[in-house]
Image (cartoon, rainbow, N blue to C red; front, side):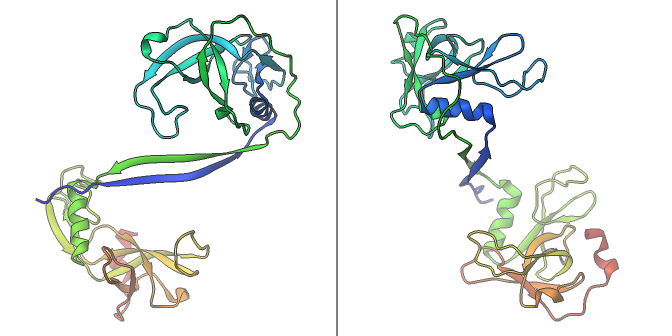
Length: 313
């Protein structure tokens, strides 16, 4: 058997959200080198601040400035920093209870090695040179052996307050389709479509999954299906997708390939979108060098009878 396929993949998108008055004050304060917490009904000061009391669920707005110095309550050493982390050299993740706060803030501590970090050590905020109103305005914490720092007593009122944030969400991972789908992908390279038959219920699943989703038993028997198939259901797409060079409207359908026990997805072309219908007989169209069908087009055959595909809806 050929080697199992693997490929590096990245999922990335900008996550945009608005912030309420409490988070707005906290983020704007960081931009101005001020750390704000919020006081709960029982007098505790929470840093980072929250908008609702975690005990009573009541809304809280009593902002309190705390000191930029504090004490490490617990820590873990990071030997290999990853992309996007606060420091590009080994550092400690620490929970720091800032002076004047009753809860701890998670951030990075710039220290020469794990033997220099300990619970109870005193640290202070190292501010980023350029600040925009984000948690990264605190570049990191650093060891501190000076005296207490008294907060200036800022109230949380700032000019040009932060009202929203944009965070880049990204996931890097290596995807492996496994034995069954590796065979499926390799067959597509030869312009063939294959599935695997369940030894119990005898259904042929395309794309194959390596196990029957109904019976739960392993599948091994490879079966070539199609190339023709039947449209079971479909939708008309009227909104153009970014980076997709297909003019709207177009039709995306479930297609039950001949011999398959499961419908797969495919775009329908070669026919006006308003003439696509359930039961339409179609066949795949391959473009030069493609590893999968570009779209499906009508074969010209009579429509399939509903009873022939109703179990695949």
